Amino acid sequence: MDDFNHPISDIVKMDYRTADVFKKYQLNYCCSGAVSLKSACEMKGIDFDLISIELKEATRNLILPNYLPFDEWKIDFLIDFIINIYHDYIYRVIPSYSSTLESFTRGHQTKYPELIRIKELFTKLTEILTLHNRHEDEIIFPYIKQIDSAYRRKEPYGNLFVRTLRKPLHTIEREHFQIQELLNDLKTETKQFTVPDNACVNYQVIIKKIEEAYNNLLQHKFLEHAILFPKAIAIEQKLLQL
Image (cartoon, rainbow, N blue to C red; front, side, top):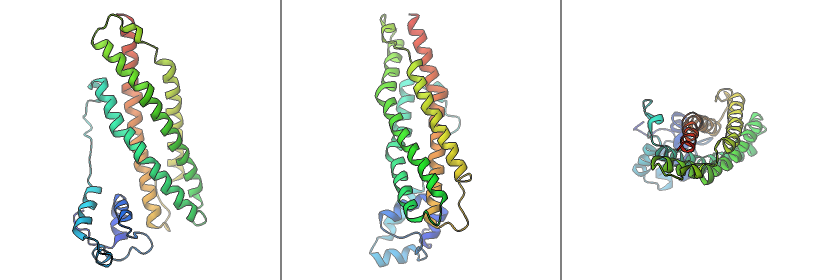
């Protein structure tokens, strides 16, 4: 979308990611968002060209090609990719989504009672993800990098680094299962991420953000569960044979 001189609410309906830009400039995009963006900028003394640039940045699509050979990447690079892309998303974005959902639900639970359950599920998901990520960042990932380095260098005492990942990975896998269950429940409770016919723009934005989080977490889980952890266990076995 290149031309943003439309009613603010229409812009958000076309792309939910614009909502955060309007929130930053304190421009109402929900119940009183029928005014055009240019008119709203003139009334509030906001540079229309500047906000248009920010809206373009917010709606820029960054797509990872399907052919990326994740399974061929070196382990330390794969771990850094997971941390900088997926863990950073969880630390920075998920809590803000949770806070927005809680605030909106508090003021609209009578009109949208289904949000009470959705909010409970997303709050629990946020709590589990935060603890889960810290455990990986502080314990699991540094250990995997350590044994990977020992194996690549063929260190003669590399087997002494092996503490056996299988036991801590049982905990990780249990948390992955909990996360998947919560994601499945969110998909069910939101009716496949759809909104009621009477839903306001804020409601639509919230559901879109939950769907974004859902898709992000599925890819995150795949990279760890299907690629990283099996590689790490295989390295442990090779180290023990040195």
